[in-house]
Length: 446
Image (cartoon, rainbow, N blue to C red):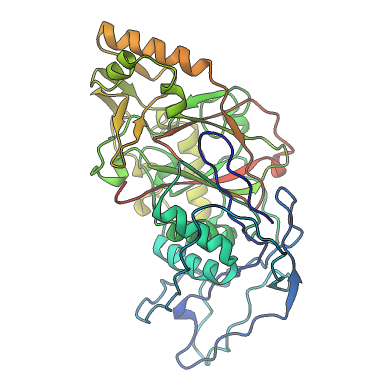
C-alpha cells in the first residue's frame, strides 16, 4: 500500500498502513500471576498492496469467553517507543517494504496460559462504553506493534500539526462476518478488533472519544448504516434522501473550554466495516465556502445573531424510533437506563435550542469554525438573515470532494472546518449494506 498524494484544498494525507492482524489482548485480570504469556500462532506473510486494492488478509476475530470482569490497571504499562520525527513532506518508499508477519487466520483468541483449578472462566474484554480507556491504551499498544514505521510517523506528524482531513487504509478487520445492523445497534462484544483499532488510532492521534446524551443513547460509537424505518430521515441511518451539507451537533456550545459532552465535537472519525455500494462521504472545506463570500457577509456571520435548533437525530429524545431501537439493543446486551445507555439516560424536556450565537468563530489555531445545518439555523435580525441567505446560496454552488471509506479504512475530518453530506443510495442486501462506525473525538487544546 502506498501513500496517496494530497489533492485539493484540504491537504489530504493517507499514511501507509500495511494490511495486518491484531488480536484482542487478554484482560490483565484473566492471566494468573506468574503465568507465561500466550504464544501467538505461527505467522504467515502478507506484503503491502497498492492503494484502493482490497486486502485479502483477514485478522483473527476474538470471541469473548465469559462475562466481563474489569481489567486490572495496577500493573505498569509497557513502555512504547516514540517514532522518529518524519520528513516535512509525504513520501513514497522507493522500494517495497518487507513483508509484515501476520498471525494465521482463525476465530479464536490465542490461548492464555492454563488457569489454576478454581480460578473461573477467562473474562471477555470490556465494552467501549464500559471502559474506553482500555480500548485507547490497548489499541494504541497493539497498533504500535502492527503498523509500519511510515504510518506511525505520519500519525505522529498529524498529532503535532493536525490537518482538517486524514485517511488510512488496510487496517485490521474481523475474520468472522458480522451482519450490518438493521436497527442501528448491534452486539459490541462482536466488534473487539474494530473497536481496538478505532480507539487505538484516537490515542495515537492525541484525541479523546466523546458522546452526547441526546442522541445514540449516549453511546460512544454510532453505526452509520441504512435502516428501513429511517430511510428518509436526515440522520446517519437514512439513505433514500440526500443528507445535505452540514456540521454535526451545531446546536451545542462552540467555546474552546466548554464541557466535552455539551460542546460541538471537534472531529468525526470513521472506521469502515463494509461499503460494497461504494457510497462516498462528500467533504466541503469551510475556507472554500468563505472564499466566495463578501467580507461584510463573513463579518455578519461572526455576530451572535443566530438561533440553532437540534438535528433530527436528537428529535426522538428518548421516545422515538431511535429510542425504541436503542432500548431493544440494551435489552439484548443486558444494559439499560441504570447503565446510562437506555431510554432513561435522556433527560426530560425538549431537545436543546441555542439562541443568540454566531455561525462563524475563530478557533484557537486561528482558523475559522462553522456551525450549520440546513433548515436548522435562523437569523434574528435582517442583516443576519441576509447573510445567511448569501451563505446558503454559496454552499449550494460548491461541489465538494468525495471520500470513500471501505472495509478496513479509517477517515477523520474536523467537524468545525469541514462540512459533509451524503447523497441518496440504494443499500445492498440488509446484512451486507454499507456500514461505518463513527466516533466523535476532541483535542483538549483545540
